[in-house]
Every structure is written in structure tokens, then in C-alpha cells.
Image (cartoon, rainbow, N blue to C red):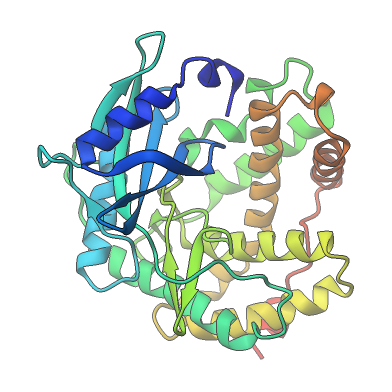
Length: 335
């Protein structure tokens, strides 16, 4: 979390949010604080997830748009957490920070199961197949979702993380040039019902639990109107990043193995045209750019640990060289 937000956040705000949603916040477990404050809390022994979002990150209408979509998916049988209303029957409540600014609060059921470790020998093609199938189901069902006009999420081009100059006054010229190339290619892509819509945008292995052969997706905070192919690139991106840090070799081979099972599962629910699948390398580059800018937004890289700096320099090098994190061959993945 940015230092400016940390300074205005207090434990009393969590307590007040808990009272709105009638949960015990006496000993909350912090699960995350990158873009939202996320806590595990309890009501009558049952765990729930309490989230507080600063107004600078999301407007109330955007949060409501996220929650309304989640309700739609949950009610249509998708493995998505139920959104729990407050004691006053509101999906979103508000608490104020020390400076008077607003934090939007909401509560979710906790997803069953646990996160997976991708290098675990017990996780192989079956997990990858279900992963793809789950995303395919979201895309298929969302094609029929028509949100009310007051509940709209941002379009892809409204994402501030696409602009390095927004976070670095002295952003490298080579990065800015490649950024322009990437955004120009995105603007040229076709947009229609079968390749574009509201997507989660962040379904990596840290944002779902695996339970009894089923994937339960959470953290819809980044959902936006985007190309479906982006939702296919994100799992591959973070999978390869994790394996690289674990010292796994032959990443291209692992990517092909993953995508073969993943796409087979995806196509049991939804199918894209070949030209849409062929944009996956572009969306791998998009994630490099947005993650690079995320690090510059959130952290003082000059004074952070060496691992963060190493990661950012690695991403920067890929951006400048105009290459994705891993090679993706559609023909190999489709075998």
C-alpha cells in the first residue's frame, strides 16, 4: 500500500467496518494490503473476508459494479464467493480515514479449500484443465450479463498502469516507445461479443482456492472490460514467473504443457477464434508493462530490497527487448 494511505488507516476503521457487517474484528488476520486492505474475520465461528478499499483506488460505483457482477456469477452457479450485505442491507459501507477520505467496505464468504503450490507433484494437467474450464465458464456466462448503467467497470484503455510516465518522471525512453507499440496494437484489435467483455483480469494461482476438484475464484478487484484472451494470458504469465523463481528449467516446455491442458478445459465452455488466441503473447507483454508500473507506483524502489529491484529490472529488460515472459506457440498448445 502507498505510504500516504498507510498513514490514514487505523485499526478502529476495521472495527467500525466489522460492526457494519456484524463480524468479529477483535483479532483480524491481515491477508493483503497491496491495493486493498483484506482481513479474515469471523461470525459465529464462520470465516469471512472483509475488504476496505480507498477512494483513490476505486470509486464506490466501481466497487458496486464488481459486486453486482459477482452476485450474477454466484447466482448462476459459478464458484465465486457470495457477497454478504451489511446489517443495513447494503453491499458497500463507508468508513473514513484520519484525513476524512473514504474507504469502501464489503464482505465476502471465504472460498473453501486452499491456494495451490504449482511445483507440487500432485498438481498437473487436471488442475490446469479445471483452471481453463473455470475461466471459460466465466466468459460464457458473462456474454449474457447486462449491467445497469450505474454499475460499470472501466474499459481497458482507462487503466493508469498502462502509462509508465504516470509513475516515473524519468521513465526510460525505450520503455515509453514499447508502451506506445503495445497500446497501438491493442487499439487495432477487433472488439465483439465473442472476444471482448467483462473479465476478472487477474486469475493467477494466488487468486483462487482448489477444493475437491473445483477452482473457487476470488479477488475481482481488477475486473474490467477487456479481451477474453487477456484472461488466458494472465495465468500463464504468473505460472512462468513463479516457476522461474523456483529455478525450474525448460519454461517454454512447461508453458506448452500448461496451455495444452488449460485450453482444452477452456474450450469445453467457450471457444475463441484462432486470431484471438494468437494475441496471447501481446497480453503477456501488457502484463509486463502494468506490473512494471505497479511496482513503481507502490514501492520506493530506490530503498527497497534487492529482490524487488531485480524483478523490476528483469521486467524492464523484457519490455525494452519487446519479448514476452515465455514463448507461446498456439499450434503446440493445441495438440
